Length: 74
Image (cartoon, rainbow, N blue to C red; front, top):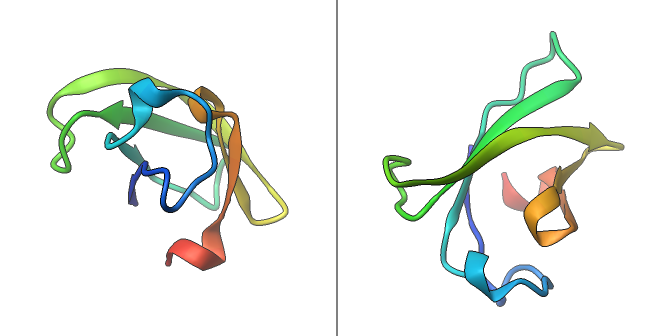
């Protein structure tokens, strides 16, 4: 899954992430979701990476302190 981080779609306060891409793979086998934030859609220019989680079908993105409803982006 790849999500473009824009102020039009998400209400977040950290401007340095605007226009970047959040990439992750959600697996039914694990509660931990590994992710990376990149400067490009292809995921090659890495800015940050880490782990996050799902809560009631909401994906948490720590860098922008926001939960994203998975139903709204699929």
